[in-house]
Length: 404
Image (cartoon, rainbow, N blue to C red; front, side, top):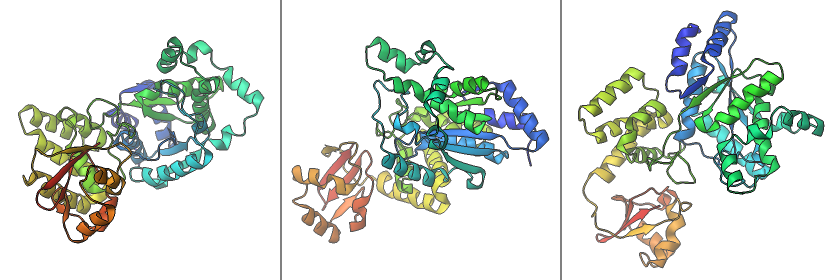
């Protein structure tokens, strides 16, 4: 059963950075309510990186709210646009993805998004279904709907133009192709982060050119990563993946800066606004931020892994990181960002003489002589994901802190 249009609008506005246009959205909701017909909610995913993290999930959680209100989501996998690569925020053109890599990444996306979305109220589409069929005349007609000056309004293009960094003509087509997706789907609403403002508004423009009702643009705030400064990104190593093991997710949430506690409650959880206000007041009154982060870690981890796994992750965290059993003044090994698992760093451990060889390392593990964060390692633990400040221990006195 639908809530009233005004009740729906209040829920949709929660946490949103901007809505274009709110009055038009209310009119769409009223028509949907009267006709008992769900609105079509569009989200485009660029399959350049296969892992979905909490930053992506900000938009996904808003779509789930819309699904709970009775509306239908269409997830557009940009397998065709991925051949160009979204230039948003890029200081240079992105290398086009191969069809094989796009396909692999898209499959991974589909496996992960249903950790958040309602599968029965979601349709997955690939934009090659329609974009690959356009002939050259249709492409020219598409290009004629905008101007070079309009395209150059994009901040990233402006910077590259003034810095005399090459801009490929094909890059100009990315926002037009994303806009064409909205035409094809007759989207009622499109969601994205604030960094997608230009692309999503282009969808409204192209729909108007084609005589269609314009989609509503809902922009969600960008979520900073573990560094507290940059937008969450796997390439920056500051992300929390929704597919990561529960103990990994729990520990990473405990690592966020205190300044982001409230923002994470607002954007990474489904807590009611009044609950978030109460938490903010507790923080203002001097409650230990660490206790609030512990509560946050429980809520977020449970969203993706369930209650039982979350309690196990909490117990692991308390045993491994709260007990003062690890010395503080120990050497640190700086790892490359792409070295994510223990098995990946064995050559580095050998090079600094922390271990003699891989076979020696395996022997020590078998003899219960190796610990990670105070817990004995087993052979299966070689595939565990590493995090900042993990501590590897051999015997009673040899410690090594691992940093990315």
